[in-house]
Length: 165
Image 1 (cartoon, rainbow, N blue to C red):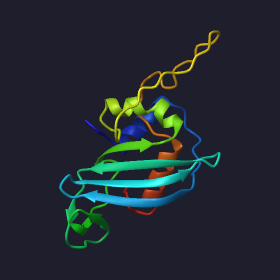
Image 2 (image 1 turned 90 degrees about the horizontal axis):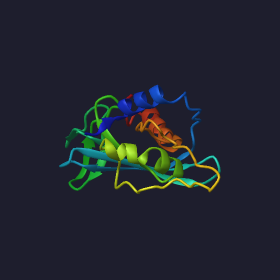
Image 3 (image 1 turned 120 degrees about the vertical axis):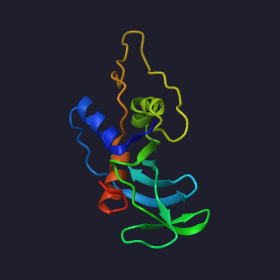
Image 4 (image 1 turned 90 degrees about the vertical axis):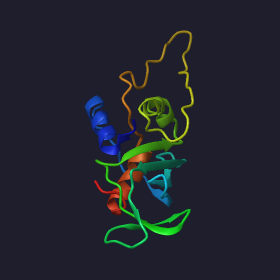
């Protein structure tokens, strides 16, 4: 059972204090569609605060497609050629997420995998510990969520009206 972006956001807000996410630069946004699967995938590179480039992806499910352009629908390259997709919404369409940053992997990857909202496989992670200090878990309540890089991509998609809030 995948979650919507609104579900994930609401769970994060209830579990954590408001994160100080300032928008990071988003580059090379690409859109891929799978009409038969009723899915659409947005990928992009997001520049981290230290200048590192992270690869992000947001996939939405239950997306409607049409061969005819409708007002507000977006053109998408699919296996059938160019078709038009109704922009997914944060409150209706289930989604799956992925980011290549360490914070996403360590804090949210397993939790998203457990609820069916992770793109790809979960990579097991063991926290580093020293002989004198045991590190506490980074997500002790096991709340699904996303990192600032995914937040930046989501904001860019919403601001460009490719995804509806």
